Length: 181
Image (cartoon, rainbow, N blue to C red):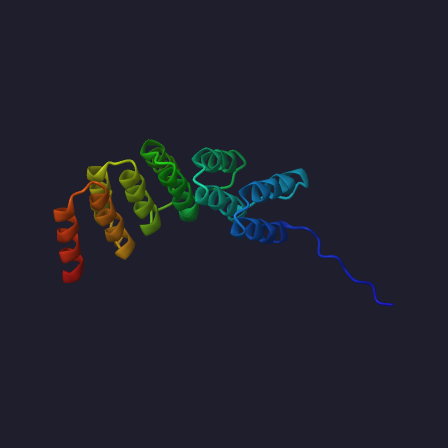
C-alpha cells in the first residue's frame, strides 16, 4: 500500500489557515495561529502579520492591530503598504485619528514604504469618523502633493465626511467636481 505524505507545516500553510480564519471573521483564531507559528519556530512573514492585522481592523480593534505592527517590527518583519493600510483602517474604525496618523508616520519613518491610495483613503476615513472634515481635506491635498492619485473612494470618503458634518453645499460641490473629471 502506498504511504500518504503529510504536508509539513510551513509559513505558507499557516498563512492559508490564518487567511481562512480572517475571512471567517475569526480574528482571535487568526491571531492564535500566528502565535502557534512562533511556538513551532516558524518565522511569520509580512503576509502572516498583515492577514491578522486586517482581521483585527475589520473588527475595529485598533489596539490589537497596532500591537501586531509593533511585534512585527520587533521580530524583524518590515511593514509594507498593506500593513499601513490595514493598521490605519483599524484606527479609522475605532474613530482614533491620532493613532491613525501616528502609525502612518511610524511606518513611513522606517523609510521602506511609500503610502498608497488605501493608506490615504483610510486616513481620510479616520478624520471623517472623528468628525474632523478639515483634516480629511488636508489628507486629500497631501495625497495629491505626494503624487498618489485619488480614486472614487477618496472623493466619496470626503463627500461622506461633509455629509456627516451636514455641509450639503460641500457635498454638491464635490459631486460637481467628480462629474467634471
